[in-house]
Length: 382
Image 1 (cartoon, rainbow, N blue to C red):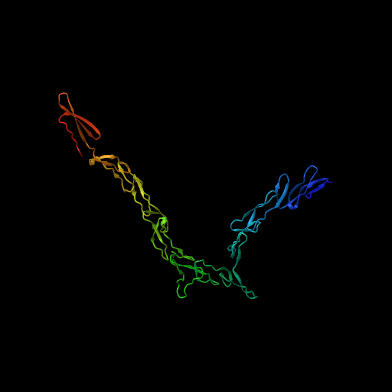
Image 2: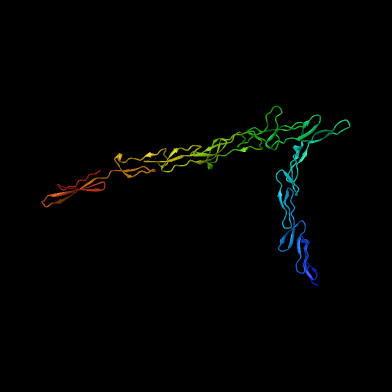
């Protein structure tokens, strides 16, 4: 007889592997003299270590409340869970739609969640029990008011809850709902106490906004808005100061224009563009528009700050010489006319008469002349 290990068992003198239930397995096919034991997952389990034979299995996952099994587990794969869509709930098996209490003529006492259904109620309780000569008399639950009343209340709804920042104008009763109102511009409700109408008039007792805060319309706020600060780093300056009922109005700094507004106040401004040399200012920038530049054309120029291109200076018309021609970004440059100098040199001819050669330098060119005369030098100065 073969001596087998703890995880084996003996059949006909052969040691065969065991399918361990502790590993989620059971025997699918017994060991033979020529084949090994074949294991498979227990029901509700799937194999996680499979080559030619399953060696280990795990239990299928259970979907949580609010989820459903979008894909059932198999012997080779786990259960796939997904969340229920909005308006439905689940205990982990499958999704159900929330009950629509109103469609049943009832009031929703508690809204449905992803894990539970909505709770419905008629909002009623027994006021007087039924007797042999009279019917049951119902009345609204505390915090409810009757909306279907003939001789007996048949349906009630919960009193409205004023929003944070509102005040109770009129308390709800068993026959009427709560009346809520918003605080007027320039005031707020602090949320720590209910503000009521005064006994003798209809004005509210909302709290005025403190310094550097505001509200600009009837509201349901528990605190006022902070006044806007016109930030110079955003190209802004203050045009109108903040009051209890209006925010600061910001405008663009000098030589800036607004690119983003909220209501009538600028929230971001950029500096006006500067025209480049060779361009002129076609349209000057304003508080709402950027500078528009245009190129100079023809025989004109601008350094970028002109409102129109200027014609180049005509040096010759001024009796001057053009030293540098004008471009679209600069004017012509003029200089004085060239100096003319006459140099007369003496030479003697064979007949004893001295002949004089004259050389004129005009505009950088030499012009030579010869004539008989006394030796002298004539210089023409500017």
